[in-house]
Length: 464
Image 1 (spheres, one colour):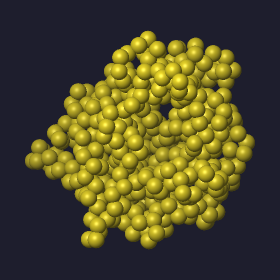
Image 2: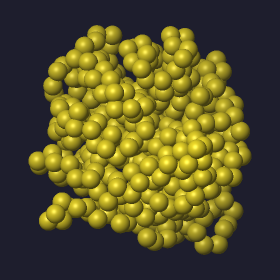
Image 3: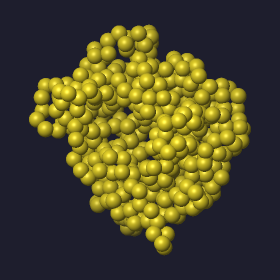
Image 4: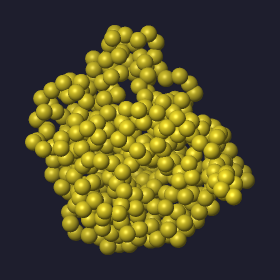
């Protein structure tokens, strides 16, 4: 690993999300979220797991910040729970929720760690979902009001805000496939969410800048490369293009150029046209201070299988295709392939295809492996360590080739509630015993800490 590829202003961090770690879902006035409702629905989450306790971060804040400091983290990405601040999604504040995030932010700053706040990481107040949630255009104003309130409250100390985390995921898996909250299976609603999230980002970003011109605003998108396995055909090439437009280009083209991909617009026809009102595309286009990229692996498209059901993407857009392709091994415990070369390719592609993006922040990158502590409390997670090192190396090569990457947030700081997988999948660099809430620093965290330390030392040596 060539640490000299990383510039002096580069910062190393880790990321979490409120519903995945906080617990305390019924405490201090917090309202119910769509994920509380989803977890309470039999059969929706593995093992019937819920977020009621999670990592108990709400009560173990000081302990967790001390662990971050011990690892040498320079920055920490967390998310703010909408129903903790506004239990019903309206204008009625819950001051105990604001106090919690004030304690978190102040604790981070005292530890010398830069806070980065995600305004929305999927925990929508249930009351808003009862009115249609993200599929209802009224969500744009509701989200904007909430976003402004968070920036007004915390923007004196937090200088980087992410509006939305992975709108593709909570839109298409939540409203299309129904495998995430709120569990809706309606392709038209999913498409409405795709438009409303782009619109909400544009409107909220402008509103945030009006109230605090000194903060930086971005969005986090889950991006990937779509690879064709086997012999390419015209059909495979068409599917590859549509899937790339559907997941990678939808939000980026909207933000940078004020338009959705023309090929996909033609494919969607009236289903999309009826959602777009005059002036919408001018609003979705907004300069971004940075782009968050969540990358885990490449996706693979295979040859059609005549007897199989059409493949769907997020519960919609079957493309009349019949195979998702077989990714090459090895795989993580999520069944995802390990493709660090794809990480390099994606970062260089963003640099080339969207030159307007001058600051890329890796807001998530990590792997799931179920390695437990031994009798001495050591967690030898060598596969996660290998994944981490390979992807950091690929990122460094992309930076050397001109990709403007400035931050890396490993996913995740600690094992947590992994959405529909419950507690069955562990992404953390810190092992959490969910019964006792004891934390164990894994070997991967020790290696990551050494990378951070070595980079800092290399900068010191270079300037001395």
